[in-house]
Image 1 (cartoon, rainbow, N blue to C red):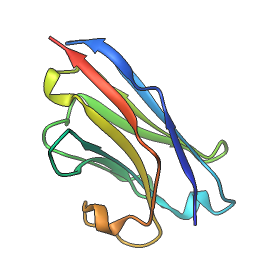
Image 2 (image 1 turned 90 degrees about the horizontal axis):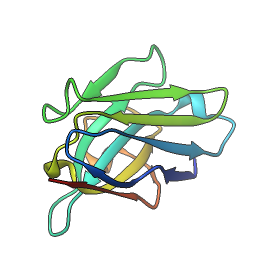
Image 3 (image 1 turned 135 degrees about the vertical axis):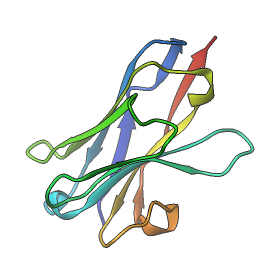
Image 4 (image 1 turned 60 degrees about the vertical axis):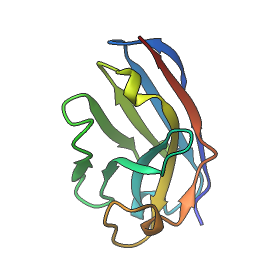
Length: 123
């Protein structure tokens, strides 16, 4: 049900930072679990980070732990992904996603998706 639009992607040098934003519609946004996924050309869509709707528990892929941080502002219907110490391997299209029920870090667990935003990290 929730509609999502990502922004904030771009080109950055290795070691730099970017913050992605996802704007959501729907008055029940606070009830959704929110996640970020990424997909490089020719590869599968991989889990990056997620935040539980109730209690604020966060989850991260091992590849981004300590570098990326997910947050949300329910008053603004927004979710963010702060990306620090970026590496060329982080280059991908990043997608915001929402799950109305329990999730297990798989794309199929999420019901709604944004259009994606390109992140390119140069070496």
